[in-house]
Length: 80
Image (cartoon, rainbow, N blue to C red):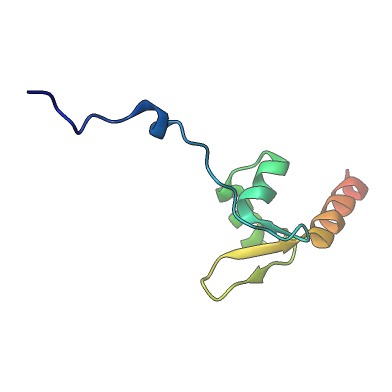
């Protein structure tokens, strides 16, 4: 008797479907990915008032405007 519940390898390697996003907004994950920082670092900067302005969605997640990201990076360059 064979086990019919074996995982199918082609399903295990299915690509993730990216969420539909506006190009004007970044998720916290995208922001951290662009700067190569951890989420903990982002939230530490946010607590200290060093992170860019964020918008809070009704579900509690945060988004960062691309323009705020650009301002943040310009200020970081000026302070370097």
